[in-house]
Figure 1: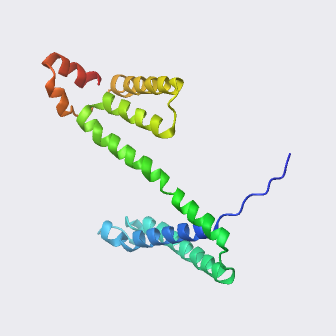
Figure 2: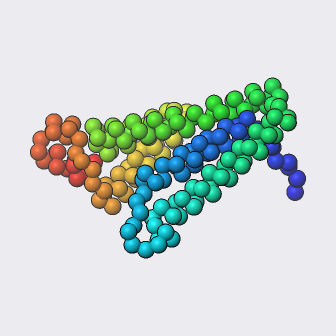
Figure 3: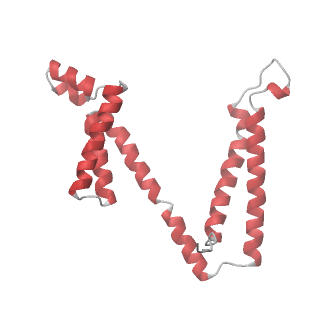
Length: 182
């Protein structure tokens, strides 16, 4: 068994992540009184805000302490050019999931206009193309996935979705079948 050493985390990336969590947890803690109410009955220990306040308080405090330690470390040992370059590259790589989040948002939007089956087929085709999986076996796997998803969600589980406007273009019998199965 080889003893591989674990690569240390990039300090710039850690700083940005810690700063992000500090801001988020502190903001959530700050707005807690606006989003929860107090009950007239019972003591302070029965209030709905108690456990969220405790959890967010501990989270915000630990994030502030981690941020302070990270900043002290960076002041004592400034970032090298190589570490800064690697950190910026890592930060840019955080945007990749946002691209796929936008695709999913488009999928949710297109389902309203084309229906579940067509929207799912377009979404899977886009993901296959974007991932570079354009070989025949991946396209067939994508088609199989779409059929499987339609069978599970529409037929098996009976998940209902509003009929898109495009279904109104079809004759009544076809429209009913599309609404029921696709």
